[in-house]
Length: 80
Image 1 (cartoon, rainbow, N blue to C red):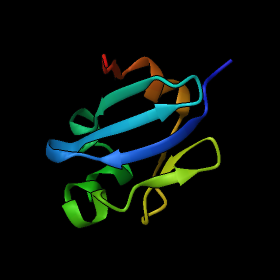
Image 2: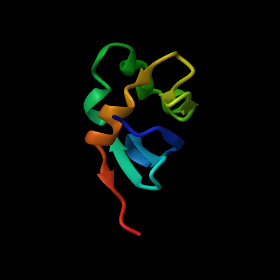
Image 3: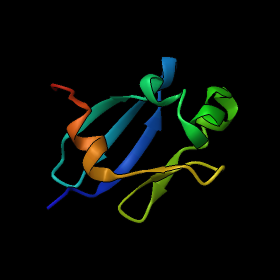
């Protein structure tokens, strides 16, 4: 079972601030993915900032998207 993303905010230096349905806020570093396939286009910060919630995950205006399980597993919890 995976957690649905309920909010996403682009941050500086290609980080994403993700809020999951369990209330956790986590930070995901996109930099390791910016040399792969369609994600290369996200080096353009204007495009990177188009990220939005889509169904249970996120997507960008270039139709790139991410599996919510990977986003959860590879992100770091932000302590409040």
